[in-house]
Image (cartoon, rainbow, N blue to C red):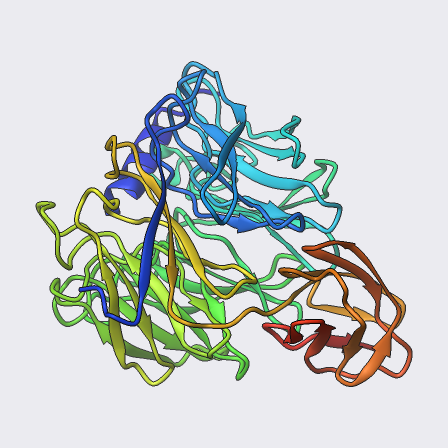
Amino acid sequence: MRNPRVGCVVGGFLSLVLSLSAQTFTTLHSFDDTDGFEPYAGLVQATNGSLYGATVTGGGGGRGTVFKITTSGKLTTLYTFCHCYDYGPIAVLVQATNGNLYGTIPGGLYDDGWVFKITLGGKLTTLHSFDGTDGAAPIAALIQATNGDLYGTTSSGGASGKGCGGFGCGTIFKTTPSGKLTTLYSFGGTDGANPAAALVQDTNGNFYGTTPNGGAYGAGTILQISPSGKLTTLYSFGGTDGANPAAALVQDTNGNFYGTTPNGGAYGAGTIFQITPSGKLTTLHSFDGTDGAAPIAALIQATNGDLYGTTSNGGSGSCTYGCGTVFKITLSGKLTTLHGFGGTDGTNPAAALVQDTNGNFYGTTPSGGGYGAGTVFSLSVGLGPFVETQPTSGKVGAAVKILGTDLKGTTSVTFNGTAAKFTVVSKSEIKTTVPKGATTGKVKVKTPKGTLKSNVVFRVKS
């Protein structure tokens, strides 16, 4: 099935697209086309300690790459795409508990996109090719749910058939790590349309997400969907409260969700909002251009409890609409601009940041840099190292990987105070199991340099 709308969907999504003395911003790598071009996708830290990402175009095949980069900036191209009419990955990769990375390709003139896996060594396998009826143009990242399956969205296609301009309004799907795909829901327009962002799973097992179009007012929605596919529209945007949410939500420890809209708000330059699981929305900040504009990336909650994100336009710099910013915002809505892009350091960031276990933030810009082909950057704001568990919940006896920095010489691992047996695999990984008697709380790892705490609470399931 040909899907000429893929180019429109992808192009439309991409087109959405003041430093402080206490901050340290570093451009780690400038792409030059031979090693990739337009890294729209953000980065993910893998269990080996390296960061992984992708570019939309460039590389040896000219159609995008998957790359690995160390925190010091050494880049290795792992895979180059060569499908003549395809785009490379737009969404960030996700590392599953089996150690492999998973991602999506939006497709091109002659196909409707696909789901793939790639090993840390660069061996790529296509798991599923969409045909339109089961979805098309997946431009969002996957997430691995607590049941081990991967969940995602497609921005067009699905059972709605001729809806949304004749190309379908998009779908929500799940796939096993081996590639068996099930379509859970097909959008029809009034319930949302053209989902462009990853889902997030809450502690009760339900998923939450956004659609940039459709809904009661045509300006996008926030949705909840059960693992079995029952969808509830929690909120429809109308413009003054924001419009066209194109990024995933993030849930804080209190259960509320936070997100961004690239348009609408008090000044028309986008918003940051909070929404309760029941659907009560509060606008925390409206961008006015000087402090950023068009935030199309998801927020992340850092270890200090604040939210961090990027805007694709606005701020300082020589770009026509501003080159974009990095910012932080408190849960109560106080925003601080941390960095304004100027061009040589990158322009128009379109992806979420990632906080590495060394405490620093890392991200990408799809343009700018030394050769105009995009960059990888780091930003230090003085936050200390921590550990991350994969997964973040499990029953007693369940296997858990602990990701960190400089874990050699670890002397103890505890789950909310209960000691666990463990094996140090490398300086960046520990393998353990949830110990008998463990309760929900932080995981702590004692090393020769001090005790590291997990960035989120580990939930012990009954």
